[in-house]
Amino acid sequence: MRTELPDPVDARIGARLAELRARHGWSLGELAERSGVSRSTLSRAERAEISATATLLNRLCHVYGRTMSQLLSEVEAEPAPLVRAAEQQVWQDRASGFVRRSVSPAHAGLRGELVEGRLGPGADIAYDRPPVPGLEQHLWLLEGTLEVTAGDTSHPLAAGDCLRMRVYGPTRFCCPGPGEARYVLAVVRP
Image 1 (cartoon, one colour):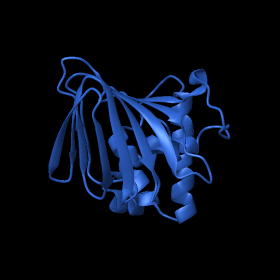
Image 2 (image 1 turned 60 degrees about the horizontal axis):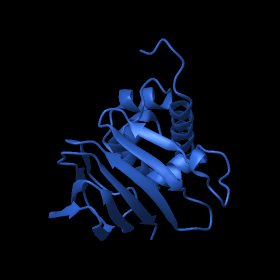
Image 3 (image 1 turned 45 degrees about the vertical axis):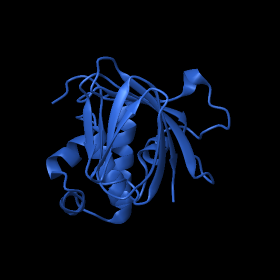
């Protein structure tokens, strides 16, 4: 258990997750059944005793019908039309080393958003379902190499390549190295 104060972003994410669960009228047990995440993990994430991983947030986004960017934008201040580089929220999955910068965060009335992702050599992130079925994604690899698997199809990418897909099933992002993979992901809600 943490003895220091939780990270402010983790605390806001936890509060938002608790709020969403309460809005649906679900107990921790009901949410655990719907998401496949243990009650204890859900409870600890809501209290910001742990930093939520990308996989955990993806499962919860699926249950709540949101993209990860939508969820993260809901814990930010009201987004402005101009997002300065210094103001772009950065979130890190400490378990995998995945770093996510919300370049153009989700905004009411807009269906698209831009995300910069960074994966270190050897990083491997698997999502068992999309946060929103039919989510449109355009991944433009800026640096390094990346292998993206959507469903049963694997796509090896080199710098400059762009992968376009609609996501209905599991996806996996692997950085074989030797350097990090840096990419821009355009996400468009259906």
